[in-house]
Image (tube, rainbow, N blue to C red; front, side, top):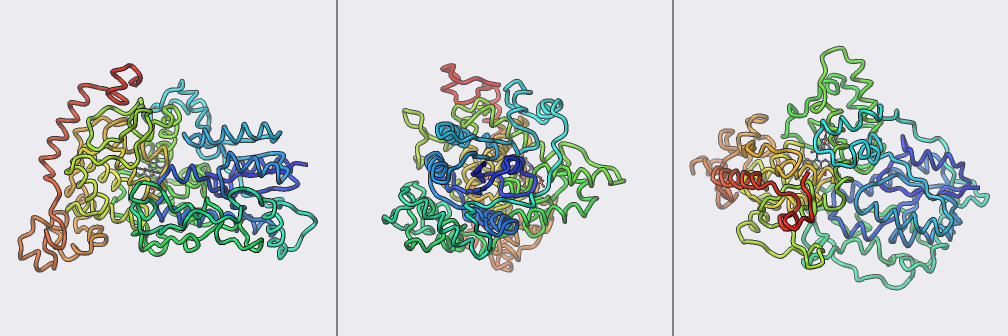
Length: 597
Ligand code: FAD
């Protein structure tokens, strides 16, 4: 009889999960739905409080969903390096099969290989199913000759032979429980879980030895999760020995809460309540609501949606965090909207600007990342990133390891980067967007354009790697493909080359919102400026500033740079970089260790 360990990772849902379906097709006598806190992964990535909260809510929702189907089951949250811990669980729980959704990103590839090898040794069969994308990303890459998909045309060409994405399937109506042992009453779940808990005794993460010292999760920099020396601290409570466990009576499989982890939204600059609640239930509710508005779905045109929108009234779908954590099946989104579009009688939009076009961009970056590998996250060794002589690039030691924390660069660029992060650039549009990002975890696509353009080739000429890190920390929907991919696009390092098209810091938002509602909301100190000055308050006469109750230079900063002057400088630098035409890093290209595209 099969005893299946189902490993949740990028698929926090029960509907349309090819991997979960594959697990159930094994007709298991016992199903162990596991979530594993992986210290390697957690330490590698910056995860701000908003995304963390979204993840915890999504885990809780999937756990509740499991219990709803089988009152004797729930998500089993465990802690430890999966390549060590899962083989232990295989042994202790007599697992015959380990099933999970394919994850082709850099770190995941390595981790999964280790788990597969360990499973093989233990005689456990591993089943991996693609499910995070419209098609199997490995198949798309093969169709594209192993080359990165650098344009929508390339992506569309590559998926042509793959047919339509599969139609979604419903959530299962039955799920076996772990460790049945004849128990059948819902009230017995706790007893059953504490029995299961005992099987973990002796594992390092579950020993009763005192754990690492408790740290103040909120006082450090980077949203309270990094010490000034650059080390990530907060997850010690998740990944170290369980310091609060009382002998045997604590159910360690439950999903933690922000409070139980000692994380405080206020101290991290995040909104007290989630701006976008996480979970499959919420994702399906949102999708259903969107699909009720047929005209919106069928005539969706990204460039026409307003960047001055927020999580309360987003002008785009705001489904990205749900796709990121797999709370929503991408195929369900594709087909539910396709059905609406098919039934719509009026004229319709098409890719790349329509809704399906957006989903294809997601595929395009995933295939490009798979082709490039881990270097896709930065410039060094990244064969698609054009060499541009940015300020504040990432530094490496002699062995090629990233130096953390990054050594300080020149003072002007450092202070510009700090002002950018703090929402204190003196450019209200930029400041409103970054403050919105930190507070809520989401910014409209064109807002992200404005931020990325400003920090890189538009004005500051700071490496896109630095901006990508800020987004990595604060975005709810941070994605290892879309984030670096879009930063490369916006900085004209890859995917897009029209460097002469630069967003006006005041003129661009004014096209969508003349009275600057977004600025008034996120930069309240500017709320009383007349419309005329809302995007450039430093140009307002002193009388106007006094009347608005905000003196520029005192209550709100002067602009940190001259927009036009810096734009002209950046254009020259872009031109020079394009004339040279290096990719990767200049050193590597010159030494013949990197290739162009
Ligand atoms: P919608 O417009 O409703 O689009 C529907 C879905 O399509 C999105 O949920 C998303 O999954 C996908 N999508 C849309 N645009 C893109 C795009 N340009 N690239 C890839 N997928 C896209 N998106 C992320 O999901 N994660 C990121 O880390 C991320 N980082 C970005 C960084 C920069 C500098 C920029 C300019 C864009 C980034 N994007 C990222 C892409 C895009 O801004 C977001 O996907 C989108 O704004 C999310 O809002 P939405 O769900 O309302 O999008």
